[in-house]
Image: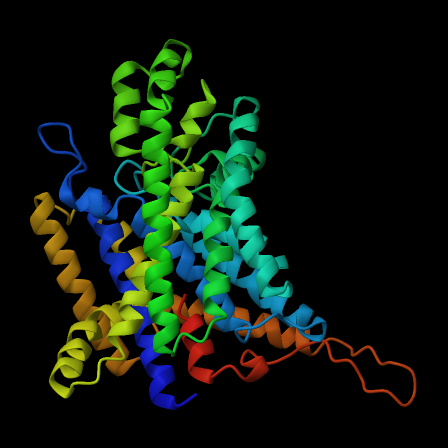
Length: 429
């Protein structure tokens, strides 16, 4: 692969992260519904989809980190050490952000990501077709599992977890992060598995970009259509309202969940809730629809990098540059956003505050990339992960019988011929 093709691929991935970042800020900063009770345009576009895109791209990043192919047994130790360390570092940052922040303003996703990264460790050792099959099984099966288990699990606090939560209520916190919280890690593994599959493709090829665009659009439209048929033509909505008196939700809360979505789960008053396609409900239609929109967005931005007319190509490059720069340091930008909306400095109206945040983070991304390179939190996580990998690689080697090659315990981040730039981009978080 040429350096130019690799660069084009990485700009597209980072730009997709940048769009997801702006979408997450919009969900947190702008109004969810208008005076009529209907979703606002910003929430209709980004609600549920921005966070899902982050999760899919986390899977893409894991694929880049592991050489865009199945990890060999000889590299198991170093790879697992790097991923576990990354998970612990991201989880620690998330718990630190949880101190003094209001989940009503913005639920911190990072502790959930930590669980997802831990659960993703076995996936990197599997062949791509099996990872793809697991994505399908998780999207269709874990919502059913959650529906069965939810009444028997501790009720979620739906607050931002902190170190105190981990120390005083570890099992309740694990339950919330895994199954009952805003971004439940077990159902959301569908996103990471899909991202690993996508990340193992040759994203520098136009044909692949167009295939992602088309496949994602079909998945998104198909999931929305299936939900509409199940709820409308087959009476799912009527069943939900018939079961409403036995639900944990009031009638207005039921309307709100059907219109604006939930907090990671749905009521268990009827199985028909699993047919809903609404933000943050973690139902099969929601998981498939948001996976599709994330994959389609990535394909579209990757395809833009293949435009050949000089003037158009230059305009696209200029337009994607700030998105790509901010997308290369989303962990830092996300942390700054969470801290800002919970600070005394956020004295602006919704629209003004959003615009100021977007401008500030895009300019910060451009300036930081031009001077320091990787973002500060990205550098911290990368350094810890690399040291963990290095320690695992220095572990005593196991030798085979005489005459055969020694089996090493570790391997490089750019194993299997992955371009160095790909691994470096994955390390940005």
